[in-house]
Length: 547
Image (cartoon, rainbow, N blue to C red):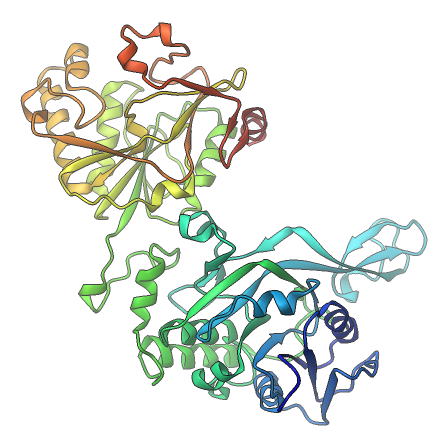
C-alpha cells in the first residue's frame, strides 16, 4: 500500500524549466505527495536533483504526451493524481488545498496565472524584452547588441484565468465572462472546460473516464477530452479558487514553442476524433449527451444559433437590443459596449449612423422620440431570440443582469438594481422606479407593445402629449386602451447596472428628492460614492474618460 496520498505526474520532453518546476512542487507540497516525472525521449537538462519523493522514468524514444501521462498514473498507488505541465509554479500547500475539496466524481482545476519565466537583457544598454524565442530577442531592439536571458520565474498576478470553454468545433477558448455569473462567485465554481496544463482528481476516476485516450494521437484536445468526459459521465468540473498554479505559455515559435512537434493535420485529426466521441455520441461512458452540457452553461459564445436535436433540452434563447443616437462621447460608448459584448449574447443594434456592433441596422432619422420608439421596434423585429434585454448606449451593464430568465411570458420585467451616476462629480443615486434600459421580457410581448405604440403615434403625427400618455415604461401605465392589460414586475440582479449621466441624455435627470412633484416618486432614496462590484464612483469615471 502506497504511503502517498497524491502523485503529481509530469510528462516532459526537452523541457528547459523541468528542474525548476519539480523543485517548486517538492518545496511547496505540504502533504504526503510524490512527484513522478516521465522523461519522454530526452534526459532532463539541467538534470533533476535526487529526492526521496521523486521518481524518474526515462524513455530513449518518445512515446507521446498522452502515453507518458498514462504511464505515470499506472505507476502511482496514491488516492489522488495531479497532472502538471513541466513549466509551472504551484501554490504553497497546493496539494492539501486540492485534497480538501474533491468529491469522487470531480475534476478540479486550480486557478491559473501566467508565468513570467525570463527576460532578454541587453549586455550593453541593459534594455529588457519580455520572454520569447532567441531568434527574435537575442539581439537588443534598441542598440543591436547581444542579449542574454535573465531568470524571473514569478507569477503574473494580473494575468489570471479561472473559466474556459470550447466552441462548436470543440476548440478551446477562454471565457472570463462566465466568472460574472452568480453561480461562479464561490471558491468552488463550475467551469465548462480548461486548458489541459493542470488538473486534479481521484486516481480511480482516471480509469473510469478512460483518460487520456491515445486514439486522439500524442497531443491535442486534452482539455476538451477531460472536461467533456467529466461532465458527460455525470461528474463535475470545477475551479478551486483557494489555490493556484502559474503556467508558462510558449506560443511564439522557434525555441519558445511546444516540445512535441505537431502538424496541422495531426491537430485536425485529434479534433475529428473528439467530435466522434462527444458530438456524435460514440463515447460509451456518457450518461448525458453533449447538448446537456451546452444547455447547462447556456448562453455560450461560439454556440449562438445552435439548434438542439433533443427539443426538450432547447433552452430559452436570450438576446440584446442596443439602440443609440450616435451622439455619445466615443470613450464612454466603447467602455459601455465592452461590458455588453463580453456577455456573449447575440446583439441587434439600431443606430442613426453606421457602426460595427452586433447586427447593425441604420435608420435615417434624427434624434427624437420618434427615432427612440422606432429604433426599439426595428431591433425587436430583427432579433429572433425568445427573451430580449434592452441595452442603452450610456449604461454600464453588469454580467449578472443577463442571468435573469423571465418566469412569465405576459409580464414586462425591470431590473431595479441600478445606480444613476453623475459624471461631473461622481454622485450616484437610486430610488424605487422602473426604467426602460433595464427591461427584460419575451420578444412577442415587447414586439406587440411597440408595434401598437408606433402605430398609434404615427397616426397622431408623433404628438408629444400622446408620447407621454403612452409612456416609456411598458406595463407601468394605464393611460391608453392597449396598455390597460399590460403588467410589470421587478427583479434584482446580483450586482447593479449603472446609468451614466453625461449631460447629453435624452431624458432629464433629477438629483434630489425635492426635484420630484411627489415624495412617492422617489421612495427609498439613496446616495453613494461606491457601487458594489464596480468600486468607487471616482474610479469608474476615470475609466470612462480613458475609454
